[in-house]
Amino acid sequence: MGKIAFVFAGQGAQHPGMGQELAEISPAAAEVFQKLDALRPGTSAQCFSGTDEELKETKNTQPCMFAVELAAAAALTEAGIKADRAAGFSLGEIGALTYTGAVDLETGFHLVCRRGELMQAAAEQQPTAMAAVLKLPNEAVEELCGQFPETYPVNYNCPGQVSVACAKEQLAPFSAAVKAAGGRALPLKVRGGFHSPFMASAAEGFAQVLADCQVEEPKIPLYSNRTGAVYSGNAKELLAQQIASPVRWEAIVRDMIAAGVDTFIELGPGSTLCGLIQKIDKTVKTYPLATKEDLEKVVQEVKA
Image (cartoon, rainbow, N blue to C red; front, side):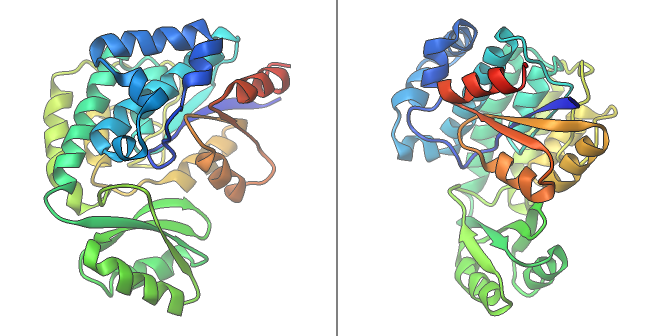
């Protein structure tokens, strides 16, 4: 067996009830929720029984997703499964940063809470939207974006899928142009034009938050969304820039595979990253890790 990568999900797959099964079957996962509840009362309640609307609010989404992801990581560690490499998609990068020991749990949670607040504030300055563009090459998406004001390619997810951020009024005409070019534009379940110039004020604010935090060298290779490569110093700069810069997810996954990773475990609700990874390379194994059944399968197949 090759190397194992833990990949930490971004927002969009959040849902009421997430993380509850893990907290019920794993003492280590339950302990993560208890610690984070002490720092932000009601976090586990939002995860387990919050409404869809509540969980869509970026200031809630990010701490709740972080909680579920770190609880999943704790459950895996408890079961004797550890990662050789780690990466996170968008907000998931803070979860990966925490898992690799670059920051402690309390600092990671502080960062993700402030990040969510800053990004929500930036999103409220102007109505924006995001869509995943399917079935078109990256270059075609970039060209289409150039034909519309305030429309940016932001997440390079996998072959034939690029997410775009735009001013809200541009979404309909841009989507029509995508369809005319032979593609599809699917609106994303987020409230903001993330990883684009719309987030410039959030990036600036987050840089100030990071300035007061201690960030250590990760214990295992950790990937930057900003560069698509392993961190090599200047972590604070990369983390701040990430908020207003494209996510190089396909580059990250290809680099991991080249480094010997053949098993990817997605931490957090849903299986979005598993799907993207399979589209990049169908020969690797992918496992979601969000439920009791998921954990049992990973322990049975990966630990063996």
